[in-house]
Image 1 (cartoon, helix red, strand yellow):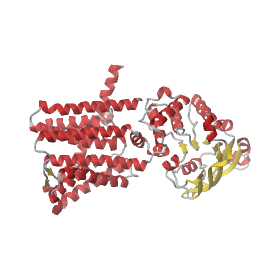
Image 2 (tube, each protein chain N blue to C red; image 1 turned 45 degrees about the horizontal axis):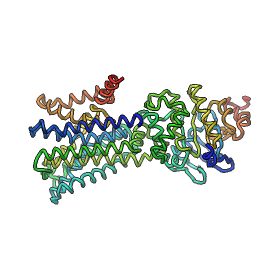
Image 3 (tube, rainbow over the protein chains, first blue to last red; image 1 turned 180 degrees about the vertical axis):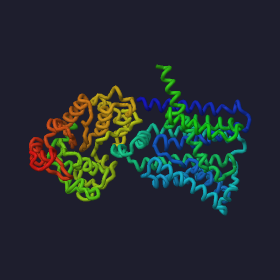
Amino acid sequence: MDSSARRMALEFRLSLGLLALVAIAPLAIDNPYWLGVLIVSMYFALLAAGWNLLAGYTGQFSMAPACFAMIGAYTTGLLAYHWKIAPSLGIPASILAAGAIGAILGLIVLRLRGPYLALTTLSFAEIMRLAIGNSYDFTRGDLGLNVPGLFESRLACYYAFVAVLLAAQGGLYLLLRSRAGLFLQAIRDDEVAAASRGVDVVLWKTVAFTLSTAASGLAGAMYAHFSQLVSPELGLLSQTGLVICMVVIGGIGSLIGPLAGALLVYVSSEMLREAGGVQLIVFALLVILIARFFREGLWGLARRSLRKTTA
Amino acid sequence: MGTRAAFTQKDHGVSCLAVSNVSRAFGGLRAVDRVSFDIGRGELVGLIGPNGSGKTTLLNILSGHQPAEAGEVRLGDEAIQGLRPERIAARGLQRMFQLTRVFRRMSALDNLMTAGRALGLAHPGALARAGILLEELALSRVSDLDAGQLSGGQQKLLEFGCCFMSPPRIALLDEPFAAVHPAMKETMARFIRAHHADGQTFLVVSHDMPVIVELCPRTICMNAGAVIADGPTRTVLNERSVIEAYLGGAGAA
């Protein structure tokens, strides 16, 4: 096995370990509020993992992860609100809807790079949010939609999130270990060179967009049925900002970074809540420091010190 | 070696790459002006010309990175102009860039694996082939390093190797020897000689005349977008128009 496969296997095993910790956490925590905090952390972890596939592995810096969570949430929310369709059908529909819209957005921004891609996806996200917020007759606008819960008990909901996150992480690992992992990273590093080696850039970029937005849609739909309320606030730009903070702080372009980052950032933001509205400032400063001094995030730092102790 | 040589039997009579009347202008500048030539299977051809004579633009047209405005490019018996670069690569035209293009945040081995998998090799086949190429190009020791951490010369060798993960029908090399340490230059030249002897077809762009003389039996010279000479290397280099193109001005010789 070569070094990159070894590295990925290590990251995957660590992320399984972290998920195992999350899975046994309810043994120690019986406060429903903190269970809820962990559920929301897992919602963000799923968003972060999806965004990392697109930004970290494929180099497509989309500013729309929260927007696709909102699309997913509204898909199942509207189906339930207007037509009484159960979550068991609504959630798959959300995955399909978000993935399909993501594929179309991916094709539209195919030739855009860097800031142009970021600005276009940002505009798309804001347009979607405003369109949903202003379609009062259909979506009830800022009032939001009340949707049925996923399970009676919060604990069942918790384990549904653990299971989905586990499946997503496993799927991601299998994808990245296949030739797709090579092709996506090649596109990230140099699109022209990737095409010259025979990589179908259009196809693989579209695949990355589709899978990433489908994961966001799934996260949004799960969150909708957990919180039982769907509103345009899910798609706020600050939510995307939070996702980016999580991935960058945890370690972009790794399997473990987004997961660790989401748990760390969201749980500490809840702890900082009493300090009042300073969380985003703290995280933004952290992101600036990390982007400037250690671009591989906390996971990169951990790996470096790990290497030093074993060497 | 024996079996592959049988498939890629040298036969200069069979066309590998046929370029006819290809043109491309940038505004009023005719960067490539009705260029025609034919490269036979197994040939090793040099492409020379002063800066700005249109060599790289021609290569960009051949590899699909820029469209031609007129003319036809045939690879074997198939017209390839207008196809996307990845389609042309998949058909067996591999290209190396003047400004090195490697996947900087992937290991040297993964760079080669990407090229191999993209051309349809399975994982074990690609891994075996990558191992041979790393050995042949003296990169085995750095195979686990990210390509961005390699020296400039090693990056060139790596990109060069990527072109040969699946033996291409033709390899277009744009200034492969520029700013490369002499030892690595020799590694690359040895590779080209060995694979040429084996039946591999090459088109090599270079400013390095001694290398062209030593490597390429045939040379094409371009100036101001047009082919001004095409023939045995010694003959081409002694042609008056070629000397004038390099030294400038009429009657300079």
